[in-house]
Length: 324
Image 1 (cartoon, rainbow, N blue to C red):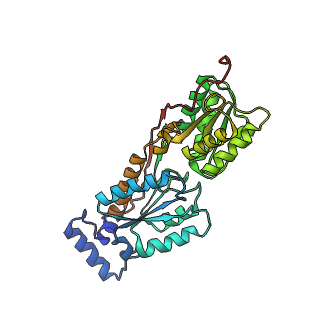
Image 2: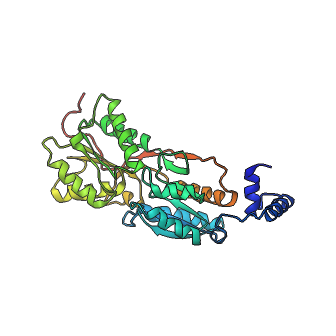
Image 3: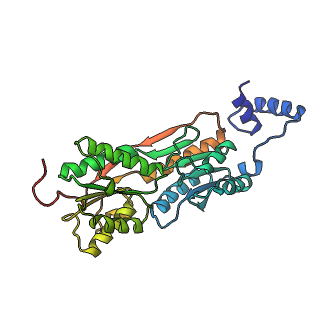
């Protein structure tokens, strides 16, 4: 009998025939086997969703979508606000999972996050949403961040921009790394390179976008366009431009990533790269439910969803003749 069948029978998985379950459980009883998993937590039907600080409105939208899909699947949800940046975060999360949660969806994982490793080692049903950990040991649902960067750069260069700056998120976030890598690749298609003094890493926050623009416009050769790694950074950049007297897009073009509802507000009108929060949330909820109900057979999946550009009014050709 396959080990996965034995595991599912011991977990009372309804997908295993009743006769098979009875035989396996009787054999386990005779051998004195005691299930090492977390029976109370596994039966709770409660999924923990780990998100970053809620000042980034992307997270509430994503959490709402995950909640709705989990509810439709018969699961409850609890929201955990934690950037998982501390080395002990994984142990704290493990303790919570051991006592209360059937599974976890993590939307804040950093590259090489120890918290994710702890969850995987404990065989806790875990799915990464939005970000990946660059390891083949856990299910991931994310957007095509590399292509997002390529298409954003293409758009700016095709408008005529040659001095393109980057306002990025954290250096240890796969989203920042992949979007920047794609952005550089997009410039390279046109024989251009990124000016390192025009590349600023920081937080996915309004403040980071604001301070980044202040730094860029005071550069000896300020950029004519800025690729912001998410919409909140871009909105901070727009705010700084308006307060400093720079017209967007006449003086500087700005493009974001995410297409959060705020990006389409009439006072903002942000050109951005759209990713589907609804699809990410739906697929993450379905995947963690599958893991809870079917166990972990050792195989993992990595789903990469396409993005698309949404043209609004924050990008335009630079002033003067279009460069050749």
